[in-house]
Amino acid sequence: MTSKRPVTIIGLGAMGTALAEAYLNAGHPTTVWNRTAKRMEPLVAQGAIGAATAAEAVEANDLVIACLSGYEATMEALAEAKPAGRTLVTLNSGTPRGARAMAEWAAEREVRFLGGAVKNVPSAVGLPDTLLYYSGDRDVFDEYEETLRVMGGDTVHLGTDPDLAALHELGVGGILLPSLLGFYQGAALVGSRGVTAQSIVPYATKWLEMIIALLPEQARRIDERDYGEPESALGLFYDTIPGDHEIGVEGNLDVEWHRPVHDLLQRAVDLGHHDDSIAALVEVLKKKDDSE
Figure 1: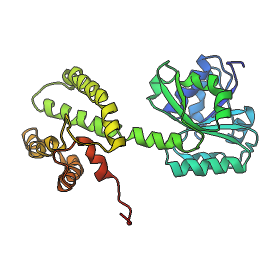
Figure 2: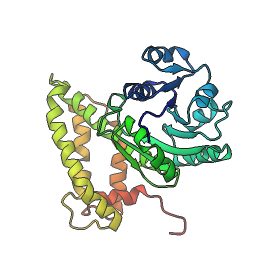
Figure 3: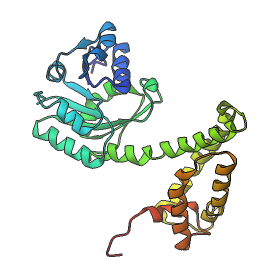
Figure 4: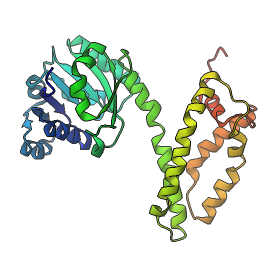
């Protein structure tokens, strides 16, 4: 199987542009389309073929990669296309329900479909350790795996359910903003003393590495609902709530973003989890069935 399959990229935001550039750099004939045609110009200058319409872009190649804002935007962009027989790969945000609707849309039009997600920033596209995962028809993934790997060397098929990539995207993606908020608060705090954000990067990195090392054990506890004899008890976090407010005053910071977390901790303590593992918070996050 040739590694130089022609590809079509629909949607040329920062990520879509990075995807197209990766294929051009790897020597793949690449057709591009974007609603704002001006975004195509730099890629055309690099050798891409600019399509006048989305329908024309879909007609150009068997493999179509859509990198738009969501599933509805993809359906809207391809409304006038005749994609029967094509393979559509979506790399966008969205819910599992949206992915299932996209799969149904594709099946109705005799389109082979893979839902996917890029788990990195545009500048990392094409690197050997950049993660992309997909779900849907395994035969389609196997057929195009080599070509998909151009976008990132860590390329994974999660399963045949078409919504698994979206499920994992939300399951993993929820880690990002709280982690960054924690760093931004730290940067604002040390900045209140004239210390640069750069100065805390080595220590924040070590802290994140420690958190990474904890994840397998935290996952085991969650899967087994085993919260006893913890190294880090939930009560340790609960007891520091006053400190969050105090540091807000000292550093002149808005710490209101902690309020929902404090509420979760309070509810967990009220349920008797003060001396349990912090992983017991997952029990508070789960909504109970009416029958329970």
